[in-house]
Image (cartoon, rainbow, N blue to C red; front, side, top):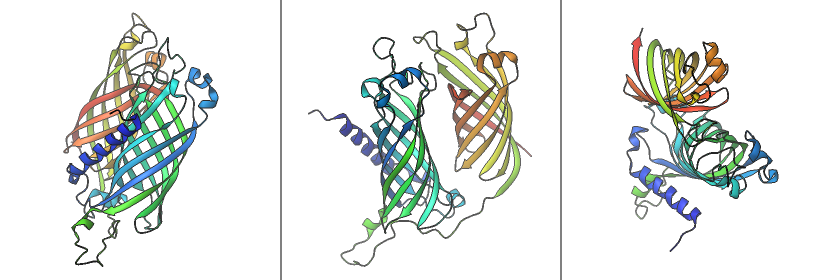
Length: 385
């Protein structure tokens, strides 16, 4: 029996939910009885960065429409880090829809994780900011003979990023209305060329069904009047605790890229940096540091040169639980670096801390505003008072 692809995708999403339910969610939140299921629709337009794709059948690319299914947790632990962030929501999701001509871009979908941070607390109606990160798949990539129009995506699998500014409105005991604006980005980080990426800006609206997993423990045949809350009731909001101390971070990472001359060969990249981070409080830190980059994909483009590049950066870190969301901006110290890569770069990254000393980090090092390479790295911290 052959199932349609969309049905297979839904089965995959359900499997992810089942695995997440059997996993030890205590590592994120020790009070995890409050769950929710969401269905969200999105619509909007493209922000073009690829010339051939923009010119090919332009009427098919002016708009996009997508659907998301999500399963998540309402955090509720008053003693955990969540209480300092107005009790975020987090979970997993599946994304699919029409974003262009399927003969050119394919029928892409994505699986991802997300976290939503309320910007104020009101049980009835509150704004939030949300970030999602995952893997996009089922693209029809660029091919120099059979699909030259898709100069935005060079691989079947990409990274998926969604940033949302939205609001949650309580309709009744179980249902919420979700709405907002979001930006979607698909890119493979120059692992495969071309990689102009897909960028979409639009609106979203959906419904959230909240439930309490402990309700099934109540025997309503004996206690018919006992109905548990579908959402947590928050009364404790811990303030951000000041830290006001510094630390040094030493970080090294590797990457894999292609260049514009030859899309059949991959080249290695290397990054390392030493930086000073000042921890303002339990939620925020600022950084400044020195960078060393090596990009072997420059060899065919600039034969006979050395390919070591030096730079400096500053940044801001948003700390939550064992994770740090990082954004850095920098410039090159030498004329050679500016010749090869331009005058500035950015590094958005997500850091996971193993205890107080070691961490793993995935980041995107950019060349101006476009992807240069994905950094997969590890680091160590040295406390400094």
